[in-house]
Length: 355
Image 1 (spheres, rainbow, N blue to C red):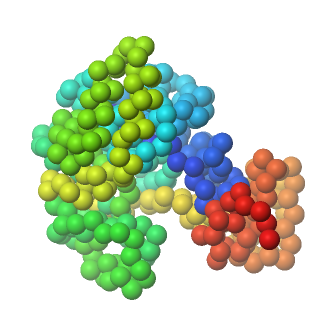
Image 2: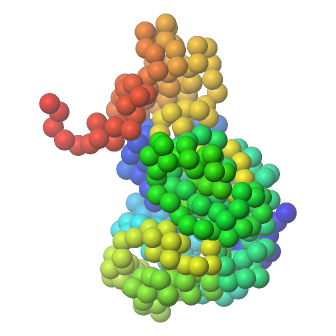
Image 3: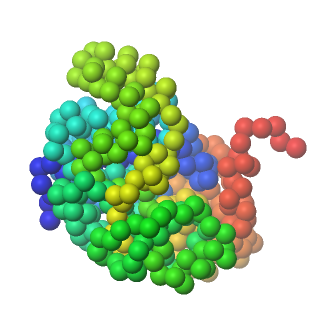
């Protein structure tokens, strides 16, 4: 199922994953961690997931300057010049634009998939089929295809894609994008059948996305044109440091996806999760006795149930008498928190004086 020579995969790997503290930190965020205890980081799993449709030579990683060495260690086969370093974070639109302008220089006929680095997909064969179908569509059209996830619950933590059709596994026109809903609205979306979770995975030809950016995000496109004049020269890093921070700080959803009239979706039940919380991460860790889910060398749970324990960094952990708690430790930091309060973890862990 390997894609054609023009297939490129852009992996965004610049986030800090603050809701999974202390295992995910600004120094070593979740995309670089073996979060699920499977022996590979989420970034490595992402690359592995795309190997059926593209060679490693056609893959790119856009990340922070601070993480370039981590990417090199975890992906030694990736061409060094395909690891792109953002001097500052400016959200996904500038991130994606930088990668696509670089790819355009190498291959004006490129067909591109853009994906986050910190999600998981369990149904990998179906995922490859979906991506291949999208790539075939965008190779012969000036349209954008986004991947929708079949919802199995009224989730309030994801944005939604509203399609003109309930049809899955085929490419259909997008009606509109919707922000994260409240519970009642999410239940209505689920019942309607034509609303899908937005996985943040996009497919387009390089000519299409450059044209769409020029139309809908001209300020960013203008900055990219200035940087592009220096591609392949010693001045590139200087130009990037000067012009990239001037780019509008905006997501690709707001910059392009919600403005364009050429957006399609292909949806399916892919076993996808963005692993954005300890509960979602825990659901993909093998369940043990009393519903506990554990990653660690020597973790002992006594009179405890429904707990998520991530203690790979610890020699020995003993947990007694807890129910539905998150226990996580890394780098000398320890979290013990009711799972019900997990959305507050990044606030709890913020560097402010304790009361």
